[in-house]
Image (cartoon, rainbow, N blue to C red; front, side, top):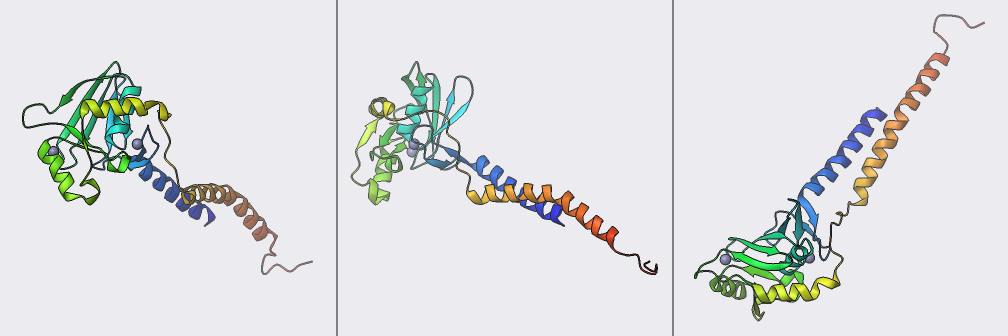
Length: 205
Ligand SMILES: [Zn+2]
Ligand SMILES: [Zn+2]
């Protein structure tokens, strides 16, 4: 019984841990916890084929600069079009998509939650028209946003940061392990008690 409880606690704690680490990550620049598949989350592929994450276009560029040669991928905040910035030797070398219909830029709010990348002037207008907080924000070109990232670079300790696991999850895993450890002990105790009981029908002497 104790062993069963232990297994349940352990499994519950472990699955909560696995679920969170599969869906949640941490911005490698500012340390904010973010959902991996959120529309405003950026992934940064470094040249060793490792994926890193950034919470906003500026943080993503900072992470991209840190890995020197990298590809920053995000989505237009208005139309969800895939946007890629390529960084070589710490410099912005190309952006995608290209063409006259596009003008990749950053709606710049000077804080992570308000920095949004867009693919075109129309999308920039759409963001400023849709969100009150964005109505008066300036637009920065990719080159300007990259300049901002370079000046902010030294303010951050860049690199992998672990996600925070709620104490409840540690509690579940901990009590699961304790219960499992206790199980054989309690079994032995029960066995001893059972043996100590006088056998019925056999008179005591
Ligand atoms: Zn960030
Ligand atoms: Zn767009």
